[in-house]
Image (cartoon, rainbow, N blue to C red; front, side, top):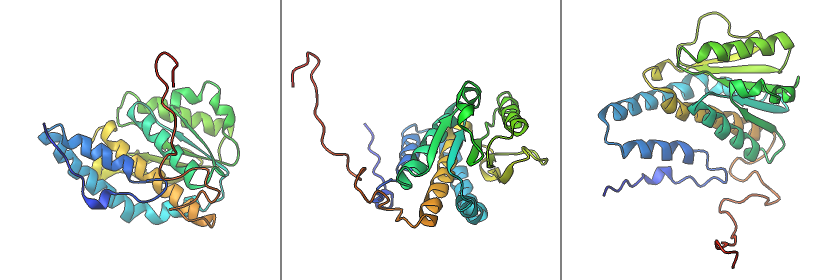
Amino acid sequence: MRTVVLDEKTNDRSLVMTSSFTNLVLAMRALGRDDARVARSGALARGGAALLRDFGDRLAAVARSGFSSVAYLGSGCRAGSAREAALKMLETNAGDVWTLAESFLGLRHGPMSAVSRGTLVVAFLSSDPRVRPYEMDLLAELDRKGLGMARVVVGAGLPADGLTSGEVLRVDLKAAASCDDGEMAVLDAMIGQLLAFFRCLASGRRPDSPSQTGVITRVVSGFRIHSRNGDR
């Protein structure tokens, strides 16, 4: 049996718990006792530091750009990134910013109709060379159809030429290029958290307590446990 005790700094006191996802992912990795994974955790730390240093202000500017909705896109593990980022934007802004989390493939089948002129599209591009071309095809399709207000394109080793005509910010996570998509999800989540945080500030809300009416609370309210046979 092995016990991993997280540092007190990981005790997230915010209502939306922006760091709980990333801390739990990294703690879980520590249970594997895999030296290679531990080494790549160092690459993730360097990638996170570079992200804050090089792109923090630029993500803040995007967050203040006046979008009415956000569509987050990811494939495989990074579809989980999209879901986490969408949740953070939704709850940090008390539901005033509508969000969508989809896979690149899934967006083609109906959800694309929800991408409007006021939608910010955040694309977490896969590091898999077999997957990324399909994702880029989807971004090109959005361009052809004139969908979306602007784009944030995220990935490691992004091509030098423009990925999309609507691109406003390209976040190249070069410092974490040795990490796989499952690991890159941690950095994707940071981007989602930063966009939500700065949009909250721009709207005049308090990031630690955005739900002024108490619709959501830091601790989930009590609920009833039902037995299998229907008895209370």
